[in-house]
Amino acid sequence: MPKKSEDVIPEDTSPPEDAVSPGPPPPPITELVEEEQPDDQEVVAQQSVRASEDVVVEAESPESGAQSPKKEKPEIVLLIERLVGYRQKMIEDARDERDNYLKLHIRRLSLT
Image (cartoon, rainbow, N blue to C red):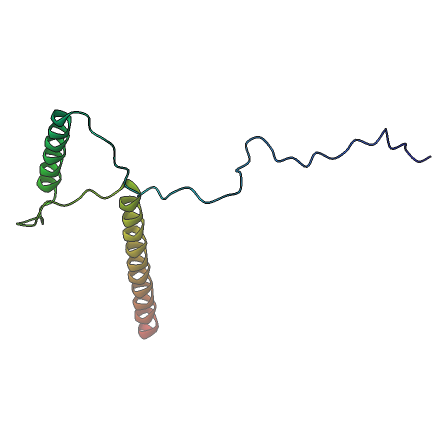
């Protein structure tokens, strides 16, 4: 027996409440946002804090030498650099392990 049209529940085609609305992508995280500073004393205080952070960064890096103060890199950049470094180390370790494995088997073959 066919259902009446009143019994049929229409399918909900509206997007869920937590869905992202279409539109332009949000600005990149690295974009600088300029804020107005109402007081000159705040600016001086912030600069002195940043200067002390630069001194700490230079003290931690032994190869800094007579270079100009470095800008701090965003945390994501530091994480990516660490991952790339780990990848390079893993590749080198794998090459060393493969070379050692081959040398061991070459020695075994030469002894027999």
